[in-house]
Image (cartoon, rainbow, N blue to C red; front, side, top):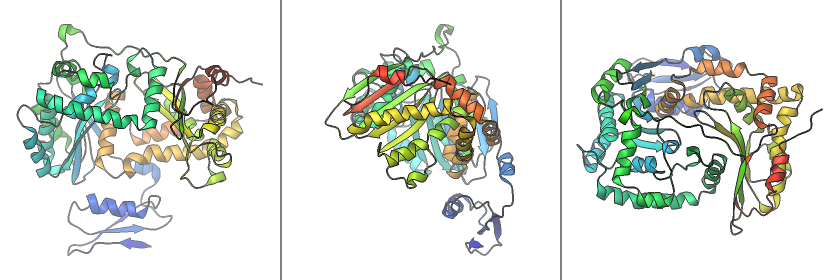
Length: 502
């Protein structure tokens, strides 16, 4: 038995865990967030011995409590007893809610958020955050915007107050807007050098062409140069409405206290729209199509192929995630070679098909993209595209016994990643982010035990039928960047989506 301890005058506390995670991970956890009572912690790991079963640990996960204010703003929290906490605002606003004219407004606002408020200039705001030893951050995606802060649990009231200031009273001064305009333009230039981001943005642009989901999160550089203060104010007034906001928290938080703080700082957030014109998201149709950006000066080709996937609340999500695990991922830095569980990964090693690939599923409120992204030499483009589409065809056409052998391995992998990822990161921030996004997507936080049950209910036949539904004989969307002369004609790629059945 291995014990790691810290000696202090008080008594000792021994905690036993299932030995699956790396021991250094647990050491880091206890050093960072385990000293809530100034008692020494002895970590005891004995192979094959655990105080609770896996199923019991899922059922014993902290409850996520949810309360709605009178104006529709929702307050959700999970109390874990940590000495720290993460609290933030998750908002249903992003590039999907933007038009061609103001695309990029949400991302621009993210840059303006911490540049001072009407009551606190930037210097004072930064000093208060620093004096708390806190970390203030934000992000924007296609459907969500988040502003959050990680701090000591005792500073939760101050953190909520500052977040309220940042979101409701951002100064948006003309001078600061002009300064941040240059910052945003430089960031756009940097993103252009990230060919994976470029390729996947192009994929969205062609797959959802003519719809808001085709917008990039950052927006075009022309908009970054022309967006005005009034554009930003109009964006906030149109989308930052109480029913579309979730105040989420995780860590050392008390839910009742959080609700009281929310009533104090967010009861005034409007829930009314001008002329009662509540914006409704229009359906974003998927279009089988392609976009190519050939540049023979680049060393490698970046290519993505995708079909329309399932929306976030669709019951097809879990079987599709299992299917993606079957296809897998690969990178030159991986070990394993011919022993990798993914058939496509083994081929990539044996035939030197690519430098890397990954199966992905990007889900939105009512649709999604299920695809494969790969990076390869220009001489192997055609081969890699062939085997990528072949990997798709194996699932709908494979016999159930063959699929079952894949499924057993991927089921465990998927189960572990779904259940353990928010926990094993050992931080309150990923848990808080999970809470915020779940409330916006599903109206509730889906418990870990429920995810486990959903995954456990997936059968090989279900995976096969779902993949037939989404992949077989569908028009794909394709995006390619780099030396892509060998990329097959679109009609050839389309014909490869149809397979004769016997």
